[in-house]
Image 1: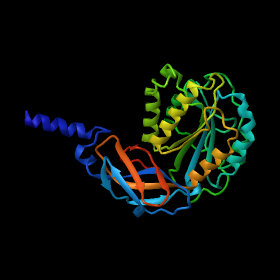
Image 2 (image 1 turned 60 degrees about the horizontal axis):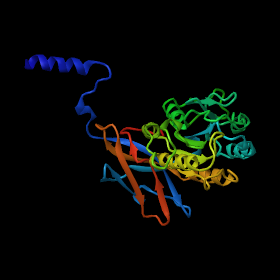
Image 3 (image 1 turned 90 degrees about the vertical axis):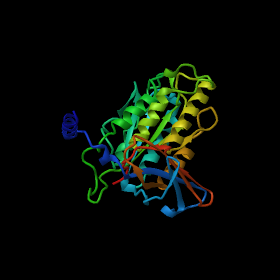
Image 4 (image 1 turned 30 degrees about the horizontal axis):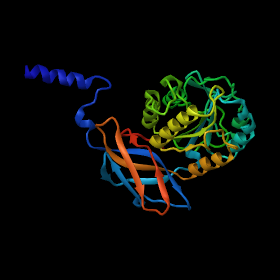
Amino acid sequence: MTKRIFALTLFALALPGITAFSQQEGPTPTQALVEFDSKTPVSPTAKDVTAKIDNRPTNLLNLAHVPPNGAQVALLIDDGLRTSIGGELNNLRSFITSLPQGTEVYVGFMQNGRVVSANDMPGFTADHAAAAKSLRLPMGLPGASASPYFCLSDFVKNWPSNAENQPGPRSQQPTHKARIVLMITNGVDPYNGSTNITNQDSPYVQSAIADAQRSGVPVYSIYYGDAGFRRGRGSFSGQSYLLQVAQETGGQAYYQGTGNPVSLIPFLKQFQNALGETYVATFPVEGNKKMVSLKLSTDLPKTKVNHPTQVRPGTIVLQ
């Protein structure tokens, strides 16, 4: 019997995709995107950050700033937004064209549980003028996205590739770039039933958070009303969900009361500042776990570290 079990074990280990448990043990370098939200300019180093993995103190192996040519920014617009967003299209175009040279951008619209590329823009591009030109007015149909969280999950799991005919030299480009999402949506999850304050535990929001964490993608958002929702419970519910997604993935949620912002410009500027303060933190994680909790803090004055609350061992966000 012992010989038979031993033979079956050897056979199983020889099959594709099966790895011996002992090979998964031990620390493996893991990365996460973190943002240093500070009132004053800071230049943090690994020594300035205190890290805990599964509540155990851990030293960072490295902390490196994300260079402009090492970032991919996905602008995801809910196709159900009120048509009043049309007054912000020029501000959005200016935002896209003002991104640092080398940063790749993608413009997509959330509809029917997925993200559809803007006109003639099949993937990420460093041609900011072309990306800005592809921007259009959302359809303005109530609930057009189905759920922004269905769209987010599908997008981070099927991250688009680069568009063809990229301008400029491609030498010395990172092989894997930092991935960041900015959603413009009302954040309401219509599939979770009532938007009452007592019903704020959505499995679909949790799934979107988990998918973004596994993919190493921080999610930022700007609240803007949907054509089918008025101010009130829907606004509160959507903003609460967007804040939850941001806090657990390492992003930020921007909103102004329960109504639409007077202008997107202040929020877009805050997001651009966040991009400029985004770093890659590298730390060792036991490789035999599916996910681990992460907690980062710093002694730098008036500085907060935004980071994902969970990471997958072995995740590489910039290479």
